[in-house]
Every structure is written in structure tokens, then in C-alpha cells.
Length: 106
Image 1 (cartoon, rainbow, N blue to C red):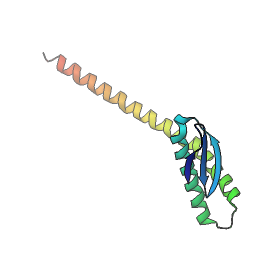
Image 2 (tube, one colour):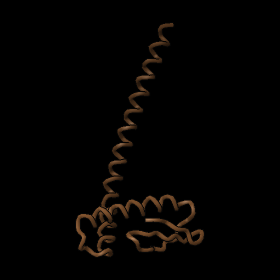
Image 3 (cartoon, one colour):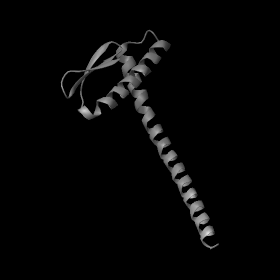
Image 4 (cartoon, rainbow, N blue to C red):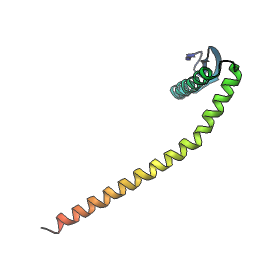
């Protein structure tokens, strides 16, 4: 998988040896590159398990699998944010208690 630039908004992505022309803003090319690499890796993984499936079917199934992963990942991210927020609040409370304890000893 490679990404070649044709003009400032037209990108060629090669997945499994095929060219796909995609319009992409210059500031999103890196993200597109990562997404294409992830998709290509998924396709290669699937092809190693089933060598008889067509490339079009591989791409479609891989895209569906990746799309299916998104809600799960988003939910996981929300849980992680909640956990970190709780840890920050706990640390803030501990710091406030420690500061109150040192202030009363003067």
C-alpha cells in the first residue's frame, strides 16, 4: 500500500496493488495514509485466511469490519475518558486535603 500525490487534493491509494483515486485536503493526507494502511493490513490478514475470495469482496468485508469496530472503539474511548476524569478528581481532592492540612498547622 502506498499513497502518491497527483495534485493538492487528488491522492492515489494503492491497496492490494490496485489504485484508488481519492480527494483529500492536504491537512488530512497523513490521516488518510494511516486509514489506508489499516485497511490494507486488514485485507492482507483476511486474504491469508481465505485465498479464494475476490479482491472486491475482501475490500468490502474489510471495510465493513473496520466500520463495525468504530462504535466499539468510541465506547471504549468514552470509558477511558471517564476513568481518567475520576482519577484527576481524586487527585485534586487529595491535593486539596493535603494543602488544607498544611495550612492549619501554621
